[in-house]
Length: 350
Image (tube, rainbow, N blue to C red; front, side, top):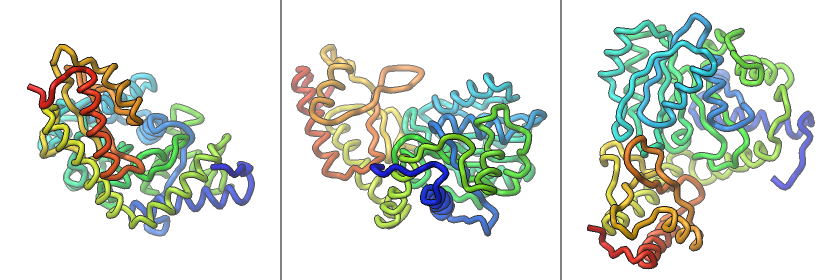
């Protein structure tokens, strides 16, 4: 990131092409196999908004399958953009089920369906392969949109299951830095979106067409974030690709979960659908446990956790996406014990 590249310079354009091709490789597909990767400036949410606004035509309708805050955010996007939609809502502690999606699609007239792969509101992993294969087998004309923000790179996602569009962000499981997101697209589905977009800057088709013809972003690109991501892809493959990244997260994530359980902290999500990348705990009811103080005590020891986003009840989350290892989680658990001691909250919790 410490090198400045001009946004129209060949060195930078080569980096953009390398990143686009590298992401298709991670997804197990290629341009030759009928897939494209479009880079979009901005946050992951900006790319989700671009995907919904570009993929769904004016006369289309999208079924939003929701089991957390990030699914509900898609509802807000559709309301702002005037995209016709229906919702199918699950509890944020449970996964999306194939049967309920099937029943809803049979009763609806939706042309598209959108869902979150790894719903980090509570840390639930949804059965993406089963869902996509069912939808494509029983509703072959349906277009499938996937928000795999915190899934791609650490959980299986195969575009050839029948996914038409999938979105993720530079700063998640590939371990780059914030600044851009990317949309993996089936080329045939992408070509059908010309003229759909509700926004100039979030038009995925136009961004792709410009990248194909000039190699450039249409508007100012995040040059340093692209260069950081290029290096992140090198390190991703050096580690052993998705299998190795998945193995490291699987070795790292459950460690604090088990230790927190021993301390008496209560899980929010059942083990069967619980993510190994992020785990939600119910906030203890002990009268001396104050979350903000607990948060500050951990931060003073070098650990930043995240408050909960649940619609009901207080909670907090511990995530391990990033350059983290089991040793880091051992230190985190020691810090949790020290924080509880400072709060005069005896362990194990009762």
